[in-house]
Amino acid sequence: MLRILLVVTVTAFAALVIGLRPFAATQAPDTRSHVFSDVTIKQDNTLITGQTIVITDGIITQIRPTLQSDPAALCKHCVVTPGLIDLHVHSPPSVTLGAKELFGYQYLLHGVTSIRDVGSSDSSIDDWQIDVSNGDIIGPNVHYCDKIFDGNPASWPASYVASSADELNHTLNTLVKQPIDCIKTYNGLTRPYFQIVQQTAKQHGIPLIGHVPHAMNLLELDQFEVQHFTGLPYTHNRNTPTGSDWLDEDLLNTSEQELATAVDHMAANNVALLPTLVNSRRRLIASDSETKATSGAAMLPSYFSEFWQVGMGHPTTAHAIDIRYRSIDQQKQLIMQLHQANALLLIGTDTLMPYVTPGDSLIEEVGIFESVLGSFDHAHNIATGINGEQLITAKTGRIEEGYRADLLFYPSEPTSAEQLPTFNYVMVNGRLYEQSWLRQHATQRLDKISDATLTGVIDWGLAKSTALFAHY
Ligand SMILES: [Zn+2]
Image (cartoon, rainbow, N blue to C red; front, side, top):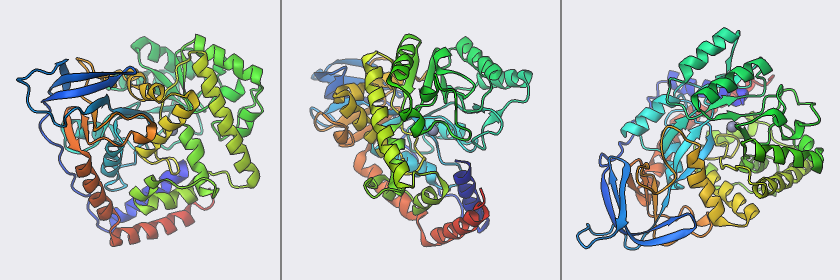
């Protein structure tokens, strides 16, 4: 990841130096109060017809049967669902000019109304949250963890590495005053520092999430949200990999008995899993012709695809590709076992990783859950209400009084993951957008970013920075 960020940063900096100005953002609509009559609410596996939803300043304030005196329906008998939530994304840095707004459109076009950023390469995430919330830029509601607590050497340029327990405590005390939805740990965090971070998270009721640090055994954790499959292959064999989170072959070499022990522990100790299977799968796009590229990459400037091919690790040999496919099968098996054991499963994508594009990758992850769990409604409940419960700075993911008005309006009931983007309207924090309008603006924005001059500059920067970092 370090390398791709360096490449992106150098390239975007080159664009800035040459004199390209950041693009002006389109303003969001001002109105955040609405009355929607004659809708069908789809929630908790049931449909309730003939409802009116009243929204005041972006909050659902009333849900009741439609009255004759209500205003005309926006779309007659429309089916309304909560907006989708992606709990694991990384946002493009500010220097990738215009990319945040383009990502914003892509999320909304796929029905993702809230994202949780779990680690950015710069400190622009809080500005993005404020800009979206004020309507200065169009996009999903932005939630975030801010810092990543790692050890030395850190995996990400923006990670925080403490030099003493006092300094760590001071940093945590400042952090918890921000509107954060999570605290994130990473591979290299030491045992004593992990314990300090864990204690702070518990004390303030902030979800502790992240990679299970190599210094910790998953079997000693409680109230933790495991990202990817970190920790799972290392409960008995403590041979954790240097420079990697976890390895496919280590998961495949973990015995059924060991995995069953991990599953039982997770279910009994509030240890959740957010697997990001779409990230495991889409990395194969660069290396294996059997894995087809998805439409998402075509909706971003071409430099993303170029970076993904040169800047990130992909399984390349026939052996590594085979192991990846077998690992994905094992990952699905584990999801099924965790589901059967009543452990908490969550949905997120790892957007910004190779070919893991904003919005459409969440649809794919919901589809994977749908096929593994054998139920679209269950997968949909996770991506809405259950994911929403993990966010502590806002109530979202449900259609209920007091919840943020993050909604999707469908002409007919969606009954599979692939139907999730078929809505006509999306509402974010009380602001209503027609899907066709969003599509038009996303295309215009992409055309602007892909302007020939800029593409030329970016290609130049890419060549320069690839040469510069070839030795990494
Ligand atoms: Zn990630």
